[in-house]
Length: 316
Ligand code: AKB
Image (cartoon, rainbow, N blue to C red):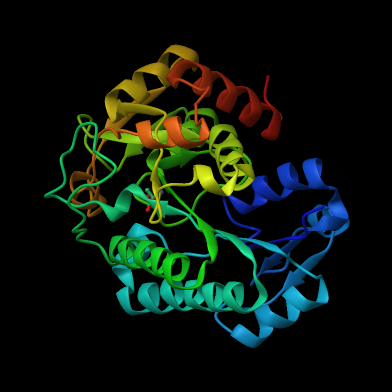
């Protein structure tokens, strides 16, 4: 049985991944790790460590204490927050990844680390962005994703570290809101539609970005980590895709499902970041190598988001 550590367990991905992994491997075999104290229900659900992933000795002690063999390393400052403090973005994103890779090398751990569509930049082909292409991002977050991918590849080729990665599109989820990303509008629109009946979107209506619903994102990385080693042929990070839509198309779908909802568009600094990213992704390598397949389209995702958020807010 695997013994798993999730670093960044309280975040948007971590808080859902921890429940899915505990369901599969047993609560006692999946340890959460985060800088922030978990909620009461999380504390009761299984082992949890509060600590700083940028301190290697703290991480090493947690790995030893729980005899960990597999790490999901999810800590990162996202694109919009990263532009407010590029130094911190570099230090946190790269420092914590280097710690994890060094410990993986020493302790023979399997590692998952997420890259992102932010690893691409304005010179990258925008439609059906290929697996191998120009990678010259213009955000510090994107720079850390390209550098991180190359670090993962280096540790794999030089020392045989079993590190696996996907380039996530924008992730849409209802359990834990994202923080500091450019794609956050695709989550915020659902919250505000139900809570206020209106939303002011911070990118223009024609902005098209690749997105994915969280259940697909979680299943995808669990399948990637379980795939036989010989099937993993991309050493940097796999392109991963599900749905692409414009901000206007998203607003129209929400309008159809939430009577009286209205959406206005007021692009801010995040527009420039969105404009530097692809609109759709060619993920045929992930599909061919380890069988990736998404399940949620725009309508199905919107129905599920609204149903769950209504329950969360106690609405009918
Ligand atoms: C962001 O918007 O910064 C993230 C991402 C695409 O990696 N959601």
